[in-house]
Image (tube, rainbow, N blue to C red; front, side, top):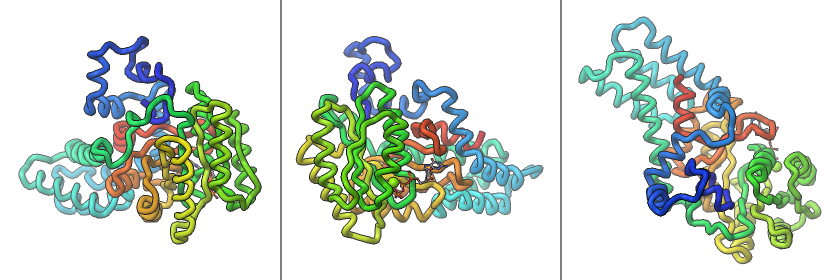
Length: 360
Ligand SMILES: Nc1nc2c(ncn2[C@@H]2O[C@H](COP(=O)(O)OP(=O)(O)OP(=O)(O)O)[C@@H](O)[C@H]2O)c(=O)[nH]1
Ligand SMILES: [Mg+2]
């Protein structure tokens, strides 16, 4: 079940049923493993060619990684030390992270020494398994309560508040437009709050996306206290009985602690008015900025309780391995990835689709 889904019937549709589940089915569905399995292997519904789009998005990374692996292993009959050294470089080059790359290669080395691994196919299998394990561990952290899970949000809370945070230019506004479109098309009443009052042009840009997605926008003059705009928007959302309120925030510099305080204030304002709000704090990270984006993310997660990540511009980088580095470092689930600039260019993140796309 997508984390923001509000309609009760969606809960059973997401179980692959066209009727409410029996008590027994419900119990099975509640088991963590069943949930995780579904999230991992189910292609998010209603998305034609989901896997193809994913493949397209990581094409540059796949090409650079797979080509390197194949050219390194090439016609060699055995996987030897020099192959593994070069492979290590290829993994690091894809931004998977130095430590992780070293660990994977060390594992491969041990298996080669024990004659348990001797061809390219097995080597790729090992890498895939290791990467999958990292992404699964993120899911497990989540269940251990590091991050709120959707099951904890009562369906009758309105509006469900999504706070969107991240530094300048990472794609917050664009992602809000895509999310608004998506959440609305699933049958929810959506509203957008323009709490990026820092930049004069921010409202105009958001207004364009609000219009594209056919969703009302609540805004005030540039320079207004963002928390005041949020307060107003919650009132407006209540008045219209909106299901979901998506809140844009300024592209704040992580070095300016006062901006972090402002975010904290917004959180308080939301929480005072609506039980459990903000229900989701989505941190937007630009995949193109690689390790730098990860550094920004560390700052944010220290200051605000980020519950999910959106990795944008995955289509624009050959260093798509950053997904792994982020999952491992932050232990926060990646909810979506941005794969282009258009309204439909946002896909639910699937570890399985990601890994298969990288090595197919
Ligand atoms: N290729 C690609 N471009 C994207 C994606 N998401 C956003 N962009 C582009 O990134 C640029 C910045 O996006 P914005 O949405 O304005 O970013 P922002 O975080 O709101 O920026 P500020 O409000 O200035 O902090 C725009 O040119 C977007 O079209 C994506 O998934 N893929
Ligand atoms: Mg913006």
